[in-house]
Image 1 (cartoon, rainbow, N blue to C red):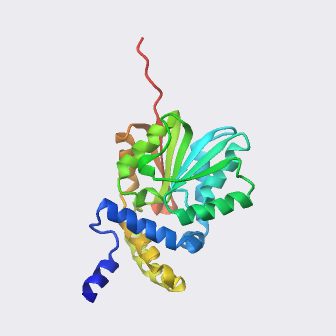
Image 2 (image 1 turned 90 degrees about the vertical axis):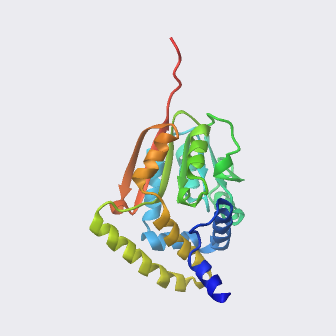
Image 3 (image 1 turned 180 degrees about the vertical axis):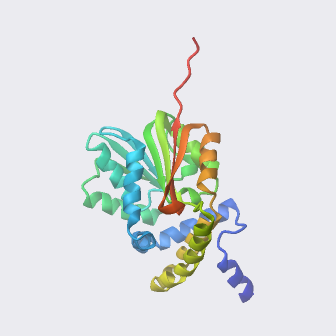
Length: 257
């Protein structure tokens, strides 16, 4: 029995049902909340903040706009977007991990952005807004965690206005063969030492490796953007393709002559 439990624990997401994956992800993010930002900083050598700023730039969001940040976590990207829209704009942050949102609320308060940022406990698979509501929709480090990837993209497309962008920032797959093999090897051996530093969050690091390895390539994600009805789809490799930004635009309506 112990051996079976150990094997099950060793692979958190392989062959998991959609419902089980959601539960695993929710448990991990609710338990790792206090170390989550530090974990990202260590794993990315501080580049995660720069990458989020790139997302804001690619989004095209401007002063007075209304933006949506999905899987907003502790609110770092949400706050970057809030600075871009200013006091006359609105940013809605949605996350299904209540503990993450609690920290995001504290961060919103400490940045005096409570009039700009509204935080909601919700799910990207069922966004509680009408279609054509937002001037952009962003998701950072989130799509690889959802149980239905295409539905998530379709929901993002649904709620943005025609001409608005849908943007994802997430783990990706290096496209140069030699670098790709070296990267995954180093990634696998780097995870355990960091897990020892934050021993109580070992599953979070295990999940990070597994979910990154199992996630589709940036090229495949771009194809999903297209098949979900987005146009002008492109992806931008960062750091040799270990991370990628994928963007697409909701098409303008066609009126018959």
